Length: 346
Image (cartoon, helix red, strand yellow):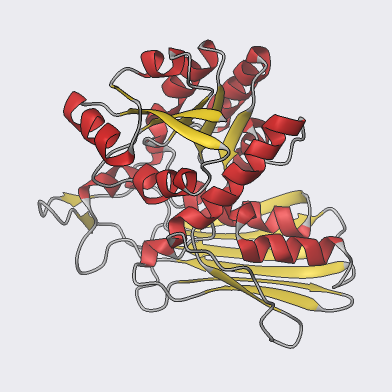
């Protein structure tokens, strides 16, 4: 049984409550929620009560140092990742940090080296790899069902802002210094799916633009000026010589979607997102993806009773438990995070 401590376990909202906690609750034979941590004592105690944790903390070092915590999960805003990951590593604990790992490749490299020096497992939250549709597609590709890959096309489009404005918690993602903008988050998760399915990327050429130059904070009416791109276009050359095109953007108000088509010498596979009520749920790492074969027919996939954001996270946790038990190394780690950040910076 793996004891888990979650930093950023807000009881009211947030990625931990949406995804990590339901995922862990669905894996009671592998994981036990030992501790939750937030920045305020009141919210930490409420999270403890609501999620059934044994302990509540407002101090990351104390949570990481608890003897029953084996794995520290970091689900806070990106600028705080470095400090909390280092606290977990200093305590000698395995760590699972959401993507992006750091604000840039330099922070990623520092954290990857620290994890290797600590001799622990350091997992990066590229959970899109564990979507049931992606797992099925990977198996078919590895079996040679579509032959040698010739080309791939990826579109990931969502909406941030619009008539209703953006929630206050999201404001920091419009600042380039945060390391949590479109390029890093939407672009990173999209490109990771591409390289996971189509193979290593030999070269990556990008262009980015900013189309929406003002956003309004929904709660206050404050107007902010983004300085991070909201469109990214790229051409990737894969190891086998095939070319792939990538387009991700934040300005699809009417039909947010994910669409990835991989074509080979013997056939093709297409991953498409199912409609969701919230645009932000339609991202490569979250979306409920459907898989279609060469003829456009759906490929059967296992169902899940979990909420959509928790499905892929549960898949990652399930594989991590196997990795920790057997010594295998299937889940993506901090070196994968560094490689991805370096790709995006090309």
